[in-house]
Figure 1 (cartoon, helix red, strand yellow):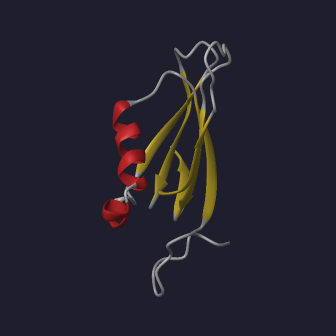
Figure 2 (cartoon, rainbow, N blue to C red):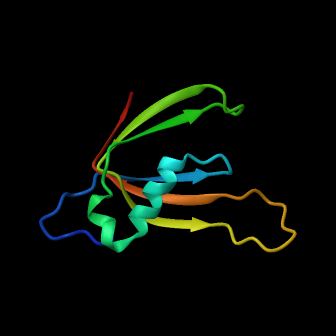
Length: 102
């Protein structure tokens, strides 16, 4: 697997995870994404994340995953034009050292 900005002698990443976020966004996670995209802060962007998978009504946690050593490897957002009524989504790809169902 190729991970951008991997430092020689650094950790080898276990896998990747693709997330799609809609309108309901966590401020803390959004800040982590912004920090991860900033080259000056990239070395501090490998925390432990706990991600919650919720049901369709967004009122019950179905599963929780603990992601160790997460690092943002790609990010994209929908290209909206005036009058576009499609859902606003962004897609993130994370590399990680380990992932566990908790």
